[in-house]
Image (cartoon, rainbow, N blue to C red):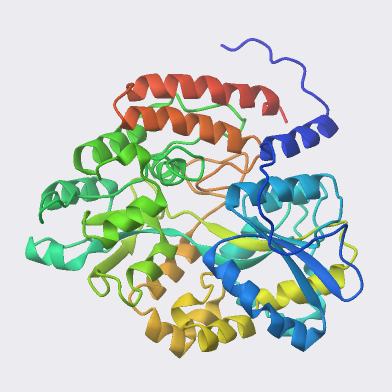
Length: 456
């Protein structure tokens, strides 16, 4: 039985702590564009991550300026750097940036702290934007505690299982329509070594709250576990957590890729593309690369729903979305940019100018009825849509949760907690410690969060 929790800090202190937890020391970097001390007149400042689809948007932004007369000043930084910069500017409400790329992890937290401008009023006056076309799980994940929208998705993803159809056929194996993790482990053993140098499956083992903890947490969910119960009691010492983690660690150690403790999304994508693994469980966004022109495995990959055990579905939900800073001097102009960058017409522009495989998909129902997109992404587009629509960010497991999130817990402290726990799990994958030892240390870390939240 735990002793009485220490006195909890007031909410104002927690809000500042939240900002601090989301911040790491700001790394200096080269900025693309000039922000200044806040845009004025007919210009806005946009701070965004340097993902390929974002840099494509930057190249197409002159079209927006031609249509609206609004100039866009971009600052583009790597993911870790941009998160730090955004959280500093938004937490201080400095107003230097009007719009920033935020995920469905940050947006509810930022909204709770009053850092974001609500978007319902704009949606109501802009029927052409067609908010109802945005997939429901995306809308839900970008909604604040007050029921208002605080973000619009640029692109979205869930997770699913990718496998080599040709390798399975040669081995006389069939992928179940709705596989369980038990079935996946059995299949991984059977296709391990099916071709020279080929392993059964690729699973992330690289430390990071958004690396190994993303897929592992979905496994924990479907095995019946949870980071915290509805009363904020830490549950990493539960039998369900131990069973799920042992399963994941054993599977990747016995039939997973070489160098698993250093393998993240990029490494698994390379392994799958180069024929070094027969299966891969990861983000639906990976399919576009596997099916891209010139990919060695184009046309050879099959797609199945995220494996389950005790839940109906287990795919995660993630989106890079646009948020408008509450202190923006130009919220109306900022909305015009957001509605353009997340609208149907922008997808059409990308399809026409760059190619339909490059369209920032995963957010609108209409994308999946567009003949041009369906033709280009036929191998995976319907499975992706089903995975996103089947995601349950508020109810991802078998028990009530105290905060939203599937592959994360929607509290500011999770970035630090998830990263520290991931280091323990990765060490278990590397064989440097047992799963029991990893979870014992992880439970102690999670209990510190429980002390802050229990009784709220």
